[in-house]
Length: 108
Image 1 (cartoon, rainbow, N blue to C red):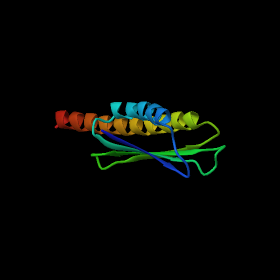
Image 2 (cartoon, one colour):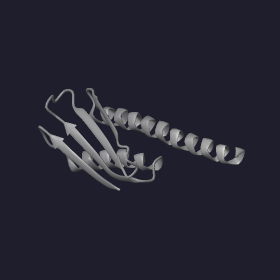
Image 3 (cartoon, rainbow, N blue to C red):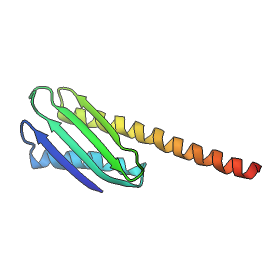
């Protein structure tokens, strides 16, 4: 899994980059085929940074979310939670479809 962290209109310290990487690294636990996680931190408004995360998978389904608030790491937490919910829902759909296909095969 490749994690890319970019900053627009400013720069991030190495410590901030490491903390962000630790938080988004957890997104690979629901969907096994995560190839890339792109994080873009927009610091155009210094008092209200915007964080966007895109999770690219090999499953032809990508996950995207963004959030803006007064706290950088609060934004990261919110975005990770949103994508976490998207991935759970997607995984449940996959599992549910497979269960229906197996049940349909047993009935025939």
